[in-house]
Amino acid sequence: MAELRFDGRVAVVTGAGRGLGRAYARLLAARGAKVVVNDAGTSLAGDGGDTSPAQQVVDEITAAGGEAVANTDSVATPDGGRALIDTALKRWGRLDVLIHNAGIVRRAALREMSYDDFEAVVDVHLRGAFHVVRPAFPVMCDAGYGRIVLTSSIGGLYGNHEVANYAVAKAGVIGLSNVAAMEGAAHGVQCNVIVPAALTRMAEGLDTSAYPPMEPELVAPAVGWLAHETCSITGEIMIALAGRVARAVIAETPGVYRPSWTIEDVAANLDAIRDTSAPIVFPVVPDGHGDHIRYSFALAKGSAEGAVHA
Ligand code: NAD
Image (cartoon, rainbow, N blue to C red; front, top):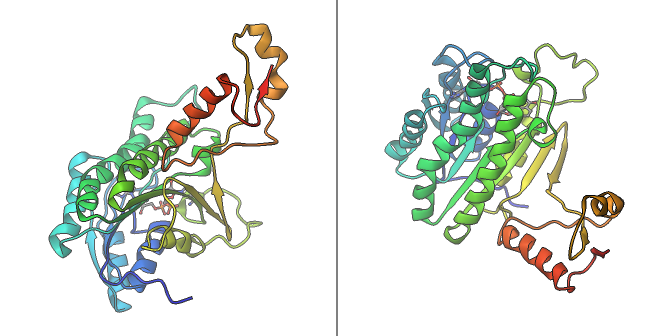
């Protein structure tokens, strides 16, 4: 296969001063993209600010013959999000790729989590996604082209202990991605979610001695493909963990139809209601929302396949 390149494309990568974002920015730049390397240079908990991580990645890209500009605005505010999108537009006059990757972690058990810790994490991951997608989306739609990648997490799909804030935010970006994929479809704008895992400072404190290789560079090609013009999917969730690349889906059981229900009926039909042996996936685009409703209506009219009439 010919090398998939990004010549002439302009990309914004948030949180690109370290870890996964750095690997994404370096890969895109190595393939010809002009890259805004955004990073506010915060601590893992989101405190402080340091301009050097973003500049260092720009220096690495430039030294390798690529083109990049540093931006240290915070994605956690509407002004910051707009400013970092404007950096791409002012510098290069276009925006083809947006990867929202910036993130922080604040751990606390649900029964003790402070509102400060909840808000701070949601501000960077979820509101941050809106703060960058909101100014980028009209630009992309008007240009008739765009590739957006938002970052979820295993914690967003399945939850995890002591990260209610993070799990909420990482589940929330899936909703934003779905809407961007639906509303962008007619304009050549595609949006997908990456569920990455890699050994970065986010793994600090974990015993990773028995882990297989998990460097950020193992994740970057999946994100690179989602960001490329040949990307053929939208409204999907891609997983990249320790060399495994996979798709995550929201699936439904066919279900059980009855013209009326009692609480006892639910209990009596539970096995069939929960039977995952024939899962149904409604793709977000073109119309997962409508397909879901139509399937349920068809059941009520007795014309849907697979489900049980009890
Ligand atoms: P990292 O801490 O190495 O890098 C995140 C970067 O985001 C940092 O350089 C930080 O300065 C920057 N940042 C934080 N707040 C910011 C803000 N308000 N504005 C701009 N930049 C900000 O972390 P990472 O492991 O590379 O994580 C990258 C993304 O991948 C995050 O969204 C994270 O939640 C997600 N993720 C990571 C893993 C993993 O295994 N590392 C797993 C699942 C999801």
